[in-house]
Image (tube, rainbow, N blue to C red; front, side, top):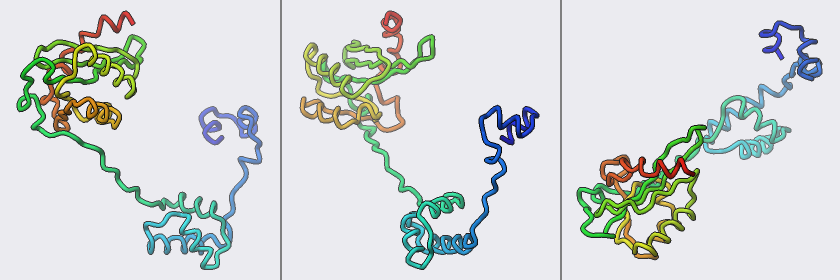
Length: 226
């Protein structure tokens, strides 16, 4: 309301009428309770003693110390003064080593090593487009160039299983460690079909075949048709 009054240059009455707000809500001033200072001091002391405790534990300890306070009030004071429990960092799954790169693990025959990757782009309206590109590294043949708005693990598995029925099962598939390729469903399917995975070192795109860098133009005409 203050922002509207200052920028538009109208009175409080006019601003409240335009925004549908009762004028009493703009004149209310919260009055701190008499025990506010003592409660904050107790919360601060408990936080210093137990930095890993959340506001629920702190509330229980306050009640045990004789404070007649609700948990919501403790939570409000907790948040307003910046208290909180530091979240434990979750270690990301990072698969891959440099030995799986193209220079050390070259394809020696047809269906020896396939490589796959996603190529990202946008259409004329700015909507996301994704190509799933699969290539035989030995023959440099583009096996799959599928264009969709998004891919789920099931979509990738359907395309991969259909390709294997037509082309045969490869010995290895090379990829980076993106979430699409290290998903448990994908890894379980490859293990069941006897396909080895060659995950390259994180942050080293030069260890992949040229498919992920040079085949984005292959699906361009198909994308426009779609």
